[in-house]
Length: 95
Image 1 (cartoon, helix red, strand yellow):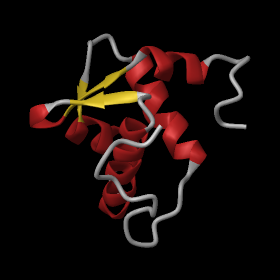
Image 2 (cartoon, one colour):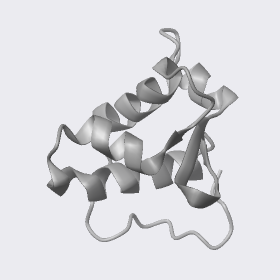
Image 3 (cartoon, rainbow, N blue to C red):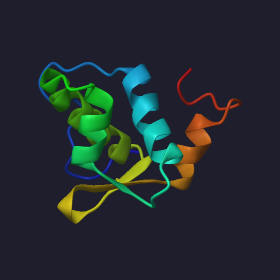
């Protein structure tokens, strides 16, 4: 389901990376907190490689578009019910 005001086209020429999307969801699920900040996600998943920050930010946004995460003001990111379901072994969300 697309939200109003969002383009069908991905920002720039960035391609979807299902492995990165799953890593974001898994990091949120494994956290002992209700949410992580976008900065914490970028720092954790980039392994110190700042060139990956844009891709991580982009994937958080498209996961939000699909309702798998919810992004709040001040960069807080929370895993949704559908996000948990997408990580289930029986899920066909990622193919």
